[in-house]
Amino acid sequence: MAEPRTETTRDGVATLTKRDFTSDQEVRWCPGCGDYAILAAVQSFMPELGVEPHRTVFVSGIGCSGRFTYYMDTYGFHGIHGRAPALATGIAVANPDLSVWVVTGDGDALSIGGNHLIHALRRNVNMRILLFNNQIYGLTKGQYSPTSEEGKVTKSTPFGSVDHPFNPVALALGAEATFVARTIDNDRQHLTGVLREAAAHRGTAFVEIYQNCNVFNDGAFDLLREKSQGVHNQIRLVDGEPIVFDEGRRCVIVGDNGRPTIANTDEVDPEQIIVHDVDGRPSLPFSLAHLSSGPTEPTCIGVFRKFERPVYGEAVRDQLRRAEERLGKGDLRALLHGGDTWTVA
Image (cartoon, rainbow, N blue to C red; front, side, top):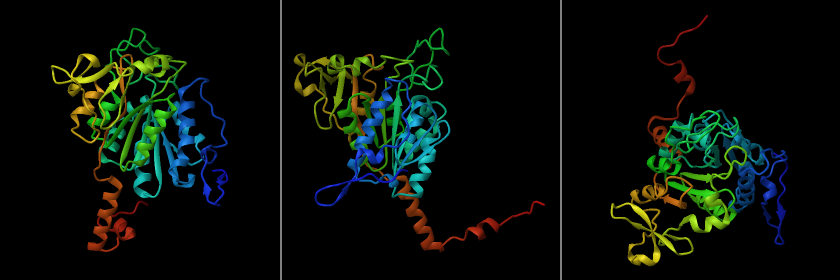
């Protein structure tokens, strides 16, 4: 890492700035890639946490998002395909004083890394996972990914994909993640707000970020990303508030089948409108995750669920402390040489 570049305020207290989290490496993504906006938002946001760069770690896997670790002037670990959550688990458990962030993509996290992802979520390791979802394999030049829509024509699916795609938010909710959210790359205010909540959460915070790949999947999220359309189609979830959108014209109610459905606000009783509850029954956020079949329909963004339960690293350290109190401090040499041993000539 470079030398600290903190600024000093009038009262002599050093404060962190965006420059403290910006490395000297040239940022190299395709011009127009949504990753630029996410990087700028994260670098600008990190000083808010008051956590110095040397106490921060970014871990990534393989994919366009894997470059992220080089552009943050923090500790970083660029792992192999899909293993970022596993690596981050070790880091977070071994050193609880570190702020641990995972940066991954839909291909990296949900294909070969799917198993590592769900186990990190169920264990509730104290880290934040940012999943950049562009619904395509970008680094390997445009093959379909686990989140590509059915019928998607790509180099690897010339007649259209026959796979049913993952819904990352629903997957995280199903794995009982304690914090699950979705946001959009080019909405700096919303993205930063979600990051702020994720950073304050104790346990695994999972954030799906719709990220435009302007080379291989351009426009996949235009219904939500473009201001002229997003104002009508972003269903912004706010804890404790009725779910209304489209400048108040539409809302989400419980339909005749018991599932959330979209209705015109002036055609329903206000009591029918669902009030969002991030810490309530899990069926509500799971149903909201399935309100749309994809980003080509009005789609929920914001925090779907947030609740507290034991954090994995804390439980591990507590178990070790109790074992030491009961059995005494362990002897690694005695363990390695105990029981059946043999010598290889």
